[in-house]
Image (cartoon, rainbow, N blue to C red; front, side, top):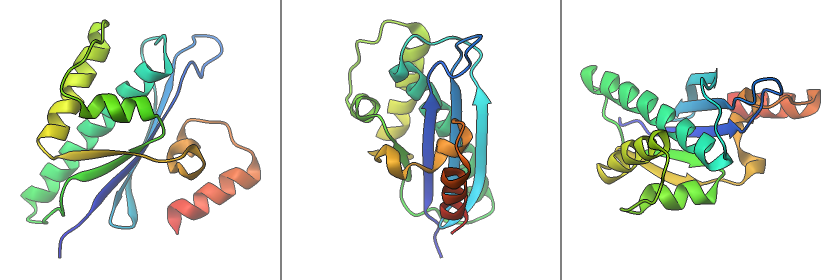
Length: 156
């Protein structure tokens, strides 16, 4: 029996009102079971939503690669590339094209790392509408009903 890996990613640009640092949230599923959830404030201030999302994508790619390696070591087959779902069309487009015009070094490094893993078919990046994004619970302050709804969807 093979396992499908799915990941939901979100970045909240300039979330912290004092330092203006972004916040990243990642939720990784094995089949329909949430196995890794990750929430972290970034160490640097980013100037764009695109940069924050791309850094979140790089972080999730690292988590997915380590998870797939652990599964491989244990003899568990993974079914195809991991599906990574993001809500930024620009990030989806830029991660799949073979050239970049990114000027900042940390964004260019994230781009090349992610693109290398897309080309190696370790991950497959797709767009998901913001309304269906499960990683919101790790990056945004939500009201009671919205948080309850997301928790129910995460845990089925």
